[in-house]
Length: 179
Image 1 (cartoon, rainbow, N blue to C red):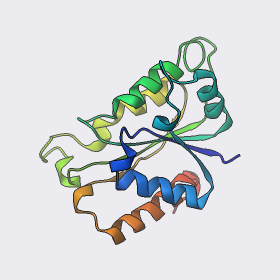
Image 2 (image 1 turned 120 degrees about the vertical axis):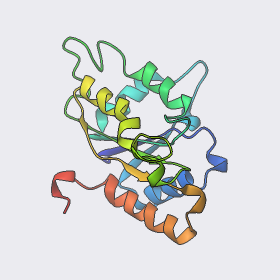
Image 3 (image 1 turned 90 degrees about the vertical axis):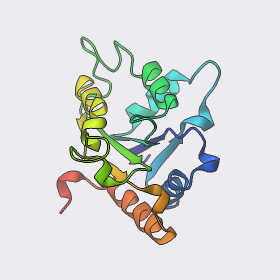
Image 4 (image 1 turned 180 degrees about the vertical axis):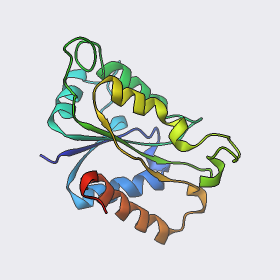
């Protein structure tokens, strides 16, 4: 089994140019397990035990999503609430995910310069995604730098192919061995 699990939290992949390209590149490469939440969602939620098994079976977990209102889509929040439970992911003697890696792959409509202290929003992407870093700390995971694609409305097909290739390399590279 691949060591990287990519949890895709896009609410409407049929209308997604960026996330769809990223998923295709990851699946074509074959080294990561691509897990699309909208494909496995059940009523009233998820098969929590299966989700836990997937997390335990992988050493790197990547949360892939489009930035919506300065956060992730609701489906990811729901998944996190149901799967990362007390007594399993955190709390006394809860070590199910300890030592595993957590990273984000995020696409944004706004430009990179919008996400800075002097930019349109006044906050960096690092600041806006800090809750995921804190989550990693809370459950004793190692938080890795994110893969972010800004300005998706202006990305050409060639730029998207290049970025998707970079995402595949990033998703499967040991950060300690990166140049």
